[in-house]
Length: 162
Length: 37
Image (cartoon, each protein chain N blue to C red):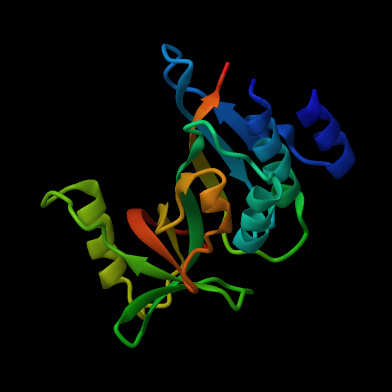
């Protein structure tokens, strides 16, 4: 009901924000909220964080944010010791890192190897991964701000056809 | 569904509909501990 009202008011594709609870056995369990930008747009993570902060979610339960996964498209470049994803049309960048503990040959390891290989080649690539350091229980995590620039722990890599 | 989840979803809807130039194409927020009926 509330989502329908929001969709009318803001012309949102109401399928762009989808809640899924994979395991229906437990009352208190993990659930995911998937979202995507409208066609031709990109989602501003600063506004997303403001939005979550504005919920003023209270404590007293074990409710909280487990992780935030994102997909971003841009060019991989080196910036000093960092590997950076430059987003076209944005001054914001992401620092790309590999997962701390991954098995040799795993999808995450292979994806980060591809990121390294793409440094400076000018190709548009799609990176999917977890925003590092932004998780925790309400309300304590609401005051947390991700590192600037934000870090993506790379999980998936793919090329983008232009 | 828990009102906590509704609050998050409405906020994310507004963000997803924003005309501001952002950085990401899509995302998945994993939450826990709410009553997720």
